[in-house]
Amino acid sequence: MEKLSLSIVDVRRLVFGDMLYCNALNKCLWLILFGVAALGSQPLASEPGLSPQAKPLVVTSIKPLTLIANEIAGDLIEIRQLLPDGEIPHHFAIRLSQHRLITNADLLLWVGEGMEAPLAATIERARNSDTITASGLAGISTPAMSIADQHIWLNPENGLVIARALVTALGEKYPVYANRLTGNLAIFAERVQDLETELDTLFAQSTINCIAEHDAYRHFAANFPSLRILGSLYDQSGILVGPRELARVYGHKQVDCLVSETPRPSAQVINLASKLGVNVVTVDPLGASGESRVYTDLIREVAAGFSACNSSE
Image 1: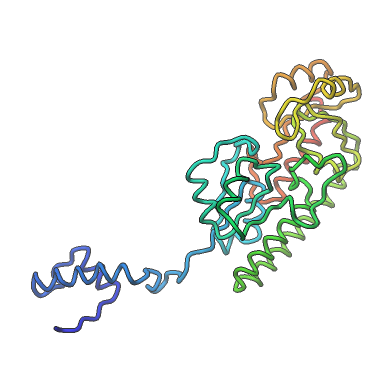
Image 2: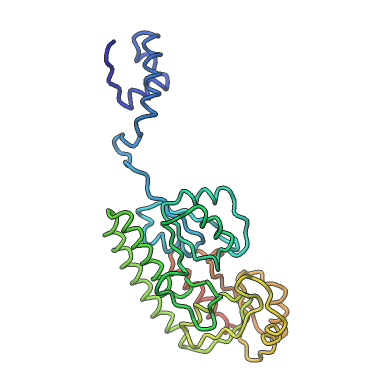
C-alpha cells in the first residue's frame, strides 16, 4: 500500500469535502477515515500561529479579586469570575456551571467561608490544592472589633497582600511567567501607594460620622481616624442586628449620613435617615454598580461615596 503523508491542512481539505483532491472515490473515502483519525491524534495547536498550550485558567469568586488578578496576570492567563456582579456572595445557590469552573480551575482565588459561605463545601470536595483563601493569608490586616467583617480588600494594604500571594502562586506554578508577574506587581504596588497618599489627604479634611446599612466597611475605615462607622443595621452576613444593637444605632445624635450599598436603600435606612435628618450615600464594596476597571478605581469609588457624606444634596 502506498504510504501517505498528511498535514493538518491536507486532512481538513479532505474532511471538509475537497473531493477534487482525491484521484478515486475509494481512495478518497480511505483518506477521509484516515484524516479523521489524524485529527483526533494531532493537536490543532501544532499549526503555525497557534499557541502550543491554552492559557492557565484562574477562577476568582467576586469582582474585587478579579480586578486584582487582572492587573497582576490578565495578560498571561484566562480569568473567569464565579459570581456575577451584583450577586450577594453571602447567600446564593451554586450552579452546575460554577461547580465545573471550580473543578477545572488551575488556580482558585476566593476570600473565604466567612464571605462566600455557599462555595465552601464545593471547594473542599473539589480541590486539594492550588487554592488561595485570601482571608487566611499571612499579612492580612483585621481591625480590632472587626473579625466578622470579611470585606478585606477594602484595605489597600490587604489588596497588596492578595496580589503578592497571586504572584507567588502563579510564579511557582508557571515559572516562565515569573518575571512578568513581578513587573506587574511592582506597577500594582506603586498604584496602591499613590492611592493611599491621595486618600490620606482626602480624609484629613474633616471628620465623618456615619451609620452603615451593612457592616462591610470597617477594613476601609480603619485606615482613616476621621472616618467613623458608628454602627450598622445589618451584620456582615446581611441579617438585621438584634434589638439592643438597633436601639444603640438609633440613639446616635451626631450623624453625618447613612451608607447604603445600592442606590435603592432599604426601608430601615430611609426611615432612620428621615428620623436623623441626614442624607443617604451609596458605597458599593463589591464595585458591582460602578465602572471600575482596576482595583484602585474600586477603592476610589468607595472613598468618593464616603466623602459625599458631608454633602447637603
